[in-house]
Length: 500
Image 1 (cartoon, rainbow, N blue to C red):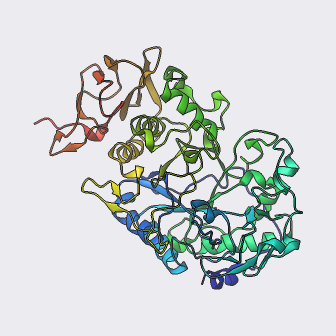
Image 2 (image 1 turned 180 degrees about the vertical axis):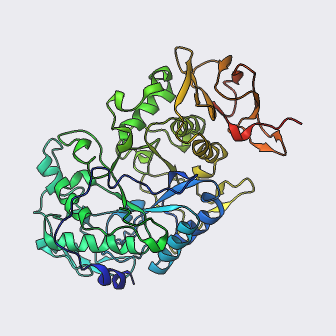
Image 3 (image 1 turned 90 degrees about the vertical axis):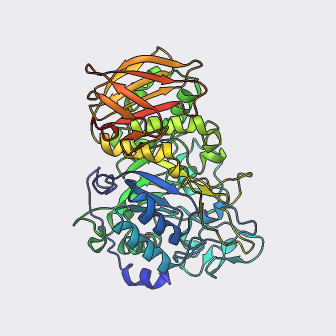
């Protein structure tokens, strides 16, 4: 049981240690690895296999996994029951503690880091009947007694409901959707949270995505983080490495994201809405060369950027969100994000849903079923697996190849056809306009014939998709027709055909 691990390492000092403002901003990617993928509601055993068979070989940097802490069982089994913890035991629909440990070991060995989605703000809401967790734990939420932690009434803020988002005290000290709000200023709460997080560090996680961070006081989080252990050397992390921490904070109301950027990275929701406007033609892409801090977004090193996440897909936060349901536009947006230099990108790997509350694909006993892979590597049986779309995993590789090169040779048609190079390593063109793109564009790539990695790839020194010829002066003829399957084209130095 997870509690055995927790009890061994939760003897935490009550003193705090000061760390620098960039302490928690290193995702600890291995060389030639980049980008986080959110394997939403995947089982631990399936994630272990995906690390070894796909994500590691394809150069993905890390995975955000669903919450590991035991949650209350809700009869309809919605996805959001995972965000209603009943204890800090490592048992969920995704698997057992032993399966979690095995996955962490195998993914780290495959070069893929793991970041846990953790719920520190609250415990589960009142239930119609007995509150029972997936691992069998019992609680009495109405009296705020969570016996397996244990927490009691003294560990929570007073009962009140968040109704005014312009009141920072109410946002941070009252309940969100009836979820009982922990008081992170109470020493017992800090002690239990630090023990829980250190137990995860001990078994090999690289960091955390902090759910509902906006609803907790930054000063309390700072104290909690200061008591965390360094990452585990036994799992391949360098000595004195601090965990990577990124925070779910929607900018707005009386609370600013700048209150949290000294604690780690921030999920930059404004990037998602801006990119939606650009791809949808609501704001011409010609303006997007410098998207980032100049647009009023977070500093580059502070921003985790995404096209969609599990909340925005369901309009949980924002009405404007591209998803897999608009696949052509979605692939264009993800390609732009992965080709551009702003922020640390995270991509979504989803399951199909008809209702916003619908849980992951499951059998008649409510056990999550494993993804089934088709001949082309994409997923079936209710899993979408955007990370396995050729257009997306090839762009992850593109990002690894262009690495730290700058954006050069920006070109646009004064509207929503754009193109740019990443130094002399890569080139991308996007047509989000209402007519065909057919023109010569200057690149910084060496002369040669290249395979477009969106429509295909290089195989036996031939291209399975489109080809792009760069002449001796760097010019290339680029064609993206409105009726093409994809509205984006990308080439890089490793996809140049050899001359016989």
